[in-house]
Image (cartoon, rainbow, N blue to C red; front, side, top):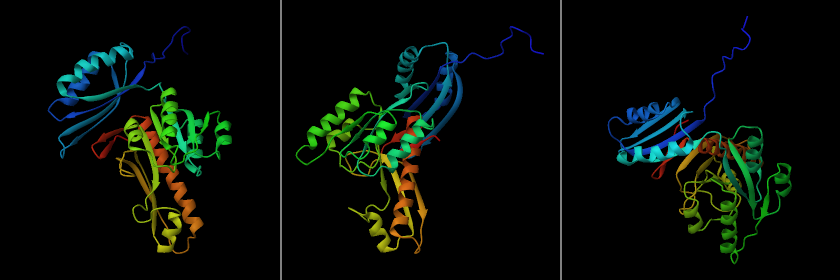
Length: 293
């Protein structure tokens, strides 16, 4: 029988995620672990990768720490990281990633992300939806997310992008998701969103460009369809890849079958990429990514 007044519950400490990269050298794991130990940090999850091709070291550490505040840890990390030439980021797990979604007329990825978010499957705070069409304002309203309709023409592109970045900055968005947003971003906007914008597209490129790619694929009798999620860069559809997947098809599949299967694949691939990014599991390594799943 439990004694009255006895509380066996351990105190809950804030949980943080530290990600870093630096030139590889001996003792890095020991140094990071020692830094956390000295501050009573309890490591809950850790992973590292040595890229022998570039000589870079990558690490992700999730730890609990009740002895020091977030700001204090950041200040101490800055001093610790300097001799190692570390590029690092520290995130509080309790802080969900503020996110803005851009979409055009195809809503399968948007609908999937909203559902996963409200179901507690994505650590996001979706604070706005921006679209060059009106189709999904009711969907946004059903999730109580502000909807911004910004039509785009060649003549208004610069003004629209200025308004987009104004909304993104006003919302304090750390992540921008292009959930089938069918407009090419300017080089300037790509630079402003570097490392924090994720795009999704079908994997027929560069073979089947332009409109109706699934019709083109069906006409050529393809046997694999797929999707790619990647970071947005000025090089169109060539940013560092986060996730890809494929599905097999055969001669019995209609264009409608291919389109439906392609949309499902796109939704799943984008959701995984967004989840990994929002959990700070993706580190950019030049033109590639390191992903600690």
